[in-house]
Length: 361
Image (cartoon, rainbow, N blue to C red; front, side):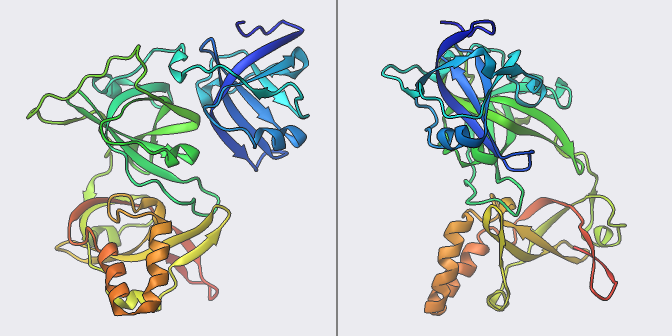
């Protein structure tokens, strides 16, 4: 039966395709994007006893439940999620009719078949929610944890014909394993500009469709050049010396190598604790022909410079207690791409020391 905003009671068959636990709201809330069997989606917000029940459910498993119209509230979050529904489901209490469904349905029943390809991407306005299509070129390294209160993120690189596009996957979506060559549509993506960089980001309840049969994927011709679908760099490249002399009020962009890290790293404290678990901060030196610049590289930005996540690095770090061979393995890992030139966007962070001196990191 199709979803009905007027029925006194109705039975839904659905699966959870995305979720996000909101701890900063008035009360802790689990927000879920439900995909119904007829292909429409709706947001469900669970609090109190319902939160405990919904935390036990598994994504992409089909469930069924009966709801009454007293659970339905006016929905105003479409601009944040891309969910086109007039209602959301708000639940405080355990639903005794909720159970796993015998039959199943595929996520490709999703009804919104509108997608943006690489050739169209530059014309999309900022903050417009879109669905992006492509074939995985590089899935990146799934992050192990967030830094402090920030959400984990990783970069997904897609190819659409001759166009290359990159999407920052944020939150739970950053943990999705995506093999090279997988045909995907990323649902509810936004184009955003931050610190001089224009990029695509997943939103709070984005999800990924794997090779839906109604979609047309265009593969790149062998030997043809790859074009950037999005001009992401809006900052002028500065020399490292000029970056050091900047005011520190705005982000700066440099092209530089990361100087190989040496054994002094073993005398430093690299690990910090946050709400999302243990994180790693790595002091590195960037160098071009003009100067050196000391910066802090957090594990959420390791992706292409250090091809290991924080859990793997943690194991290597602990092994360093066993001797010089283990220390060499750890250093070699950190230096996997040292001395290669990259484009770095540096975001200044000013703070005041106990003695009152202003310091920029």
